[in-house]
Length: 159
Image 1: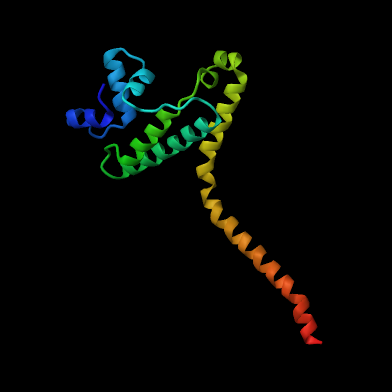
Image 2: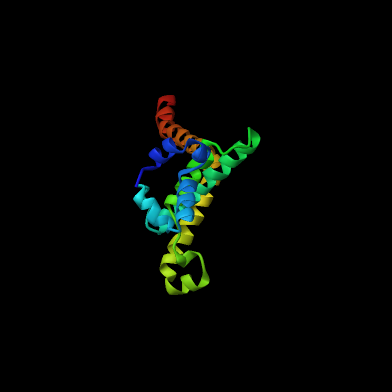
């Protein structure tokens, strides 16, 4: 089977403004094949479900959401950011353990890992604005410690 790049080259009109995940879904739907099978045949790696996969899926969903906002604010076509986010989320699927109650009952540990990973991945981007504030606080603490260390020496010199 051809690679995603070859499919894009052979069918530019059908694949323009589509993510790799969309192309794989189109091929698998048209051929009646499983998306994981088609992705594997195209050399598109799909990660095993778990905590790290959940984090990546959450971050991919965040990137796709930001991309959609940018797309809506510009020309309305799917841009590179949203395609990238969709591809990241597609490469990091959830198992049945986090998609249904029955699946969770069959594998609660797997479901808990995926839920926790997805929660971290979805929450992590919202923490970015606080990173600068933490840096400022750390800088102030460091300055305070430096002043505290020099006070005894200054006191001794004052005698």
